[in-house]
Length: 136
Image 1 (cartoon, rainbow, N blue to C red):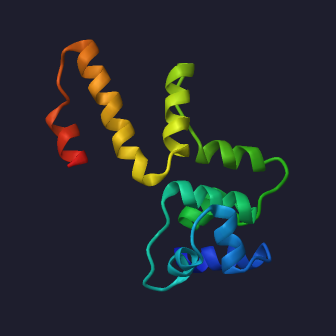
Image 2 (image 1 turned 180 degrees about the vertical axis):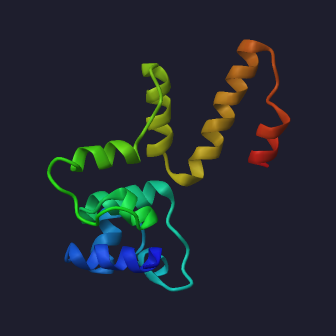
Image 3 (image 1 turned 60 degrees about the vertical axis):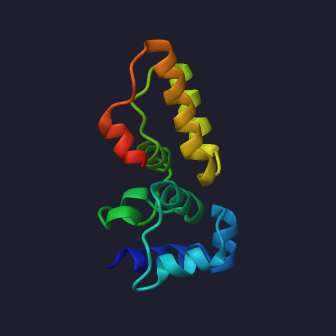
């Protein structure tokens, strides 16, 4: 089964129209249509996580096709935890990441640039060449 077919199956299993799923995930209906289309784009991990939560299916199944489709009561929280896995012990770092995730897509690059500029001021070191190439 393709990722597009799994998304469609999850949506139908949840009894949602494309428009209802789009509203629940926070995207346009056309985005759901693209995700379900044979030549469509794969959703971002953040959107895939929301799709799994909204439709009540296992994140791993939706993302990879492995495992069971449906969540059982004891695996529901584990599935969400796996989708949100963070190896962060610092509460401030966690706040920064959560703020980044909640920011509109167009605001994310400027947020990262501000954080990098602040780090440069604090440490006196410029960003690495790899970091500069990744952001353009």
